[in-house]
Amino acid sequence: MGYTELRLKILRFFRKNKYIILILAIVLMVVIAINTILRSRIEVPEPTTTLEPHVSVMNSGSSTPSRMAQTIEDYIKEYMGYVDSQDFDKAFNMVTEECRAKEFDDDIFKYIVYVKNKKPNSKMTYSIQDYSNVTIDGIKYYIYEIHYTEDLLATGLTNSEYMFTTEKMAFYRDKDGTIKMNVGDYIGYENVQSVAENEYLKIDIINKLVEYQEVTYEVRFTNRSEYTIVVADGYGSAEENVITLKGETRKEINGLDIVLSPGESKTFTFTYTKFVDDGDSISDMTFGSIRVMEQYSGTDLNKVTEDQINQEINNAVDKFSMKLAL
Image: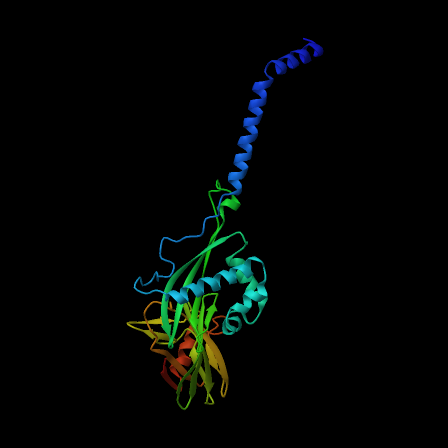
């Protein structure tokens, strides 16, 4: 079949079926138009939770007062608006001054890194849930867990994997009744005045920093003697440093070595695992194997033997423990 003959057959087909072809074309355009309209009208679902958002997960009998709950929702919505628009200065300023200083060292770049880790992109949706309500040092805290999830409409409904992250925010009223917000699992900070001392050593607990699952104490040690004092080096005959809770003691997370030269003062931070809503309280901190050493060669086994370490411990001028109330 030649090219000219093929063209004639095609023209004859279109002339013969032109009304059918026209109707099919109109139907196709209508279908495309309807689909376009329906897609544009799809509403992004509001993030939801299977629980009541203002009823505590940890204690279903506890909830956020309704007026405060609405204020918290508005506060979070405003905060997320600044985060999503990358107006990090305004978002950072919504966080308490104390939290900015203690959690982020007043460094907005540290804060931005934190935010980007929790909410990597602005298309992630969020939902809120009252996680626990606790009173610490006379202040009532409403701790909310924020769930961030990818927007499935934005990423594609066929995506079998999606990203989600969480963080906790703590809300409370200050002495003027203004609602304040802490982020980064930060709860609060308190000056502490607890001292234990004898002729050799003074221990002063200076302050306490509370996060959702940890508590950190700043402690200053002053050697009043002419000897080396070993508070902790891993060779104590008893627990070198613990806090006491109901029915148990708990070790410090980092296992610090604390050795003081004659007349020396040093400050250390001690961190312990302690969930703020576990219903338990810390009664005291104990340093259980303090040694006043006439001779101390350290514990580096490349420089000293186990026998030498034990001999120096046996020859200690004094051994004692010290307990500080909390």
